[in-house]
Length: 301
Image (cartoon, rainbow, N blue to C red; front, top):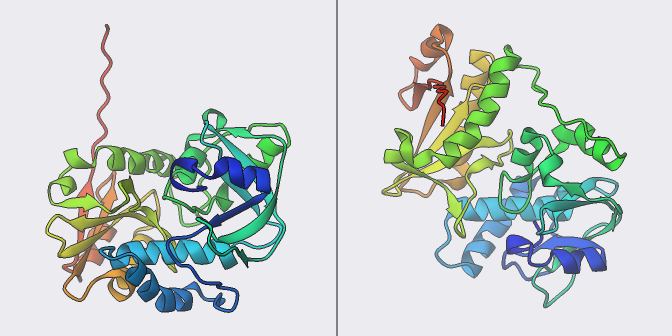
């Protein structure tokens, strides 16, 4: 995303670069460690000092995305950027990081844009979800085949279960949509009574929140601010894999994001009852298990 609501999209396209800022106004050329956690450890305090009132959750998100722009994206990678008019420019990254002092998005990379744009309405549901998952940067590598098809003049929209741990692709497909439904209807759910999805500058930034072991499906904050909630959808995966994953996410949140007075809780959501999952959760009192029910109604009118 090239600025809030793509406010810098036209400039970035005309001048052939993309970038970010987040209030960190120093040249990072000698600060871009291979491990983004080391980068975050140094620059989260800088971000918090430059952005009074922001939380460590917001700081971790901003610094992680900044490192991705400056270091994580490699020369030769393909990037997609919304043009603010319902389509995406796609381009090849052709430079390493460079810094332009005094600009709104000072941390930049050069890019050669393809002449063809990709209309959002032509994307598969899964790709639309991925490109809109978080505020500024999201990893859409798993949709490479579809994107390459668009750039070649073909459109192969399809939902594919790329996770080797998926046991039931049909449930994976259903629950990939459930995540977006949960976010859109959060206030009407049982969890929404006590927690709010983490937001940054008015936008939902708690969906697909990045960590060093993968993205958290939903990151929420209890209404009194005292507890962070990690929500993971089972998505047809093996029970042991889901339990292990949510515990890793909770460990990351506890180590990297939680304030000293905050606790961390987990929640796994699945379509069907799962004895193995219940057995695995018996040993912990910090992870809850929820089931959901799909309701379908056909009416005339």
